[in-house]
Length: 107
Image 1 (tube, rainbow, N blue to C red):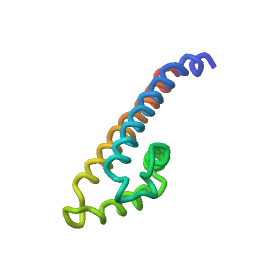
Image 2: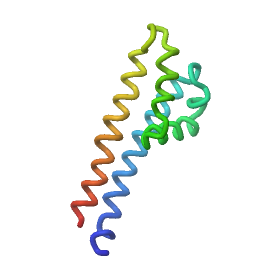
Image 3: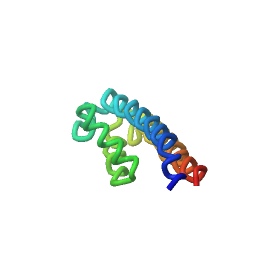
């Protein structure tokens, strides 16, 4: 119980950083993809939900495929690739691992 209460502040800090990164990507998503996919990127909160969906892995490939197909540079838009790959690397592989590391460090 002591380890769990000691890890509340570091875990909440890691979640705050993750929320900030997801918010930045949501703003970028609205800016870049609003015209191409208004169903997922019509506004900030819609884009936040979409990025949360991408973070959890729930049907994120369908969202990415819809954006890949609508690119002006041919079948695959490199901007969409950079957007989703960098998001997965930063949020999925890095920040979620920080949360797990903080929890393990306090136990």
